[in-house]
Amino acid sequence: MTERSRDEGPQKVWRFEVADEAATLALAATQAAWLEPGDFVALSGDLGAGKTTFARGLVRALAEHPSLEAPSPTFTLMQVYDAPRGAVVHADFYRLRGPAELENLGWSEAIDDAIAIVEWPERVAEALPADRLEVTIRFDPARGIEARVLEMRGRGRMGRRLARALSVGTLLHAAGWTEARREFVQGDASVRLYERLTRPDGTTAILMVSPPRPEGPVIRFGKPYAAIAKLSPDIRAFLAMAEGLRALGYSTPKVFARSVDDGLALIEDLGAETVAEAGAPNPARYAEAVALIADLHGRALPDALPVGSETYRLPAYDVEAMLIEVELVVDWYASSIARMAVPSGARMQFLAAWREILAPILEEPTTWTLRDFHSPNLHWLPGRTGIARIGLIDFQDAVIGPPAYDLASLLQDARIDVPDDLEMRLMAFYVRLRKTASPAFAAERFAASYAAMAAQRTTKILGIFARLDKRDGKPQYLRHLPRIERYLAKNLAHPLLRPVALWYQTHLPRALGPNFGPQDA
Image 1 (spheres, rainbow, N blue to C red):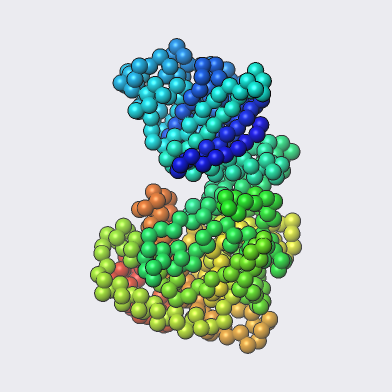
Image 2: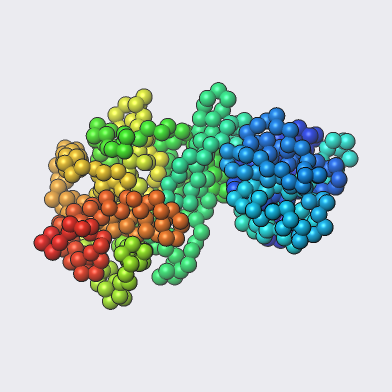
């Protein structure tokens, strides 16, 4: 099978030359891997060109039934199949005389939350959804009686998804992973997607799909939120940090194959075991993670790393980045969780208080701040030794920032409860490691920085989790809010944070939980 592409206005058209029916079925199976409930596939072409063959390949792959007959529904008009991802509806509209006849079929109800595969879609052209995958199949007599040419085009939102799927196919083919079984795995709170690939011999790898970050609307300084908050714009940051950390002796996923422009990387699978067990911290593993971060913070680190022939420069985690993050609690948590509006004057007081607290902390020595140094991203690798037993997987938003930030991220985990006594013991362990390596390490100043970074992070997370619920339709993050509110109230008890604590009590007490009172400020 050969593949070519051409641009045709806003949609890109991919052209495939297939030699026979088996190649058509195989091509269809590769496209089935990325289809989701609600998708619409329109199959066009001459009579006998192979529309039903392609549909059969889709149905078999979706149903995970390689010998399923899946005949043409020419006379029944519609056939419904049960599949692991939901219903699959295969229809043939050749006998329809227009969109009006769809109602008699109960078409809308049949395809609700199903994958629809339609032959002869042009019979109801006016009723076709704007977002669809179009596949046109033609005879290619010059190459043989069974040869066909297939053209694929993604309309609307399907265009970007088709392009990504074909890029993935190209990457996996080049890396020798075409035969691997693909399984979606739980991702994080970002736009990144992950799949676990398993070869027939049991070897596994992770496919990371990290598309370039959309710019978003301008917030201030002529920049969108992501630019102000110093979030990585594309996969280059991950690739640079993965290599930079591994060169220092830390465990990061090896990169087997990558496509920077497409935002794809095939990486080492570090398994599913983390530093947490059964929803609770494993103290020994957490101690190893603390040892790792203390080791990192004791090093002289560059602010630029190579990525291919380019150079990636880590941005500074400056005061404007930290302020735009804490402001999320006002923009999202206050309105959707506390059900209140924060006046503009109170917002300015909030930011001014934070600016005053953060300014001296940001003048202290800085280091690589990985930014997502917490249990879901810290894998446990028992086959390795020392700090190499901690597998790091999430560092693409790394910045140059305060050392206390990542320690606070670990010891005040947003997703699991870290008991106060364990937090104190591990913080003391960190301080002991730092002072052993450098007697000049200032423990008291670090403790103040820790309280401020922990409060900044918990404030930000309250806003992010409220936004994930309200804007992104991910209510599962709300169950973590009581834990984060407890962390925040505890952090605000530090004298350094008194101005912010008083602001919360006055303007947003809901964020401090039910037990925070005036005496705690």
